[in-house]
Length: 383
Image (cartoon, rainbow, N blue to C red):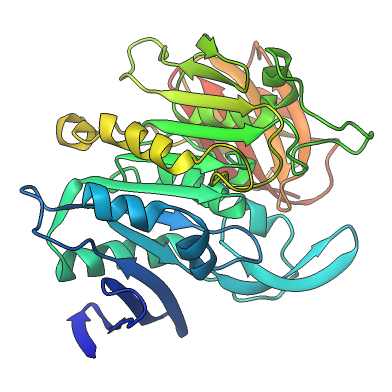
């Protein structure tokens, strides 16, 4: 049985005979056929409409894997929310001198390893189209749309917390972090929970270490992705924590002065490798934990006031030996990245707004600064 939906784009929903409420959907977007699985619970519609949870897969995976290997659809049946398992596209990437083609979401994790000359599609646009299509097809509670992801999909859920906080009420990720290239001051804040194992190979250095410290030293070890979150959400580095034998939660709730409240939780899990914990690959199923987190923030969008950050101005641009940051805000730190995401220059506690760039080669760069108003980014050219 097929149902045609005409809503901005044509979407085909095919009801699977394997699972009564599963819909295999396809949409043609920017010349590519995009696919995603939608699972609707049985029974009556909740009074305020269905909550929706998007689950984003990791590198080399697809939505079918997370449809089968997580308990999201089963929990959705119990709690009466819709689950969505989309597919990314396949791209050529190069890591450690080896080129291969694999499925990957378009975020900083892809952009830093993508082979040149590819037509990389806009996955934020794809996810917005999915949201619009699901809203047009099912009765949805627009204040309860959430996103979770694993690995590269976790990077994507982090990116969506920055770029789609007008849609998503909260974001969670496993085995991932917020990439430098996806960082930036948000229009408004949503709660974020980032979790990884202390034996996650994606975050271990190449010196032979077998684990990330299972203590407060993990914050220094993972300073870069954590700082990206704090800067983007305009939070200080002050935290509270609670711990048990297998996990430590660090909650960052203190915002910069004169800013709206925000919340970022980082969790380090003892003995967990690079997996999405489902109860069989690790003794904890994270799905009900994430759902409980989401439900705490179901009304957040309804009461949130949007704050607009000032655009970052640089001049001259293009520049030669120095560049001036035009801002009246106090600058706490400044970093410059090349187009592959490699950090080129770092400045802390700047006493002036002029930056010496004479030591870096010609090319295009991304400048990221953390000011008293949060994190801001802009691109510039070095001649």
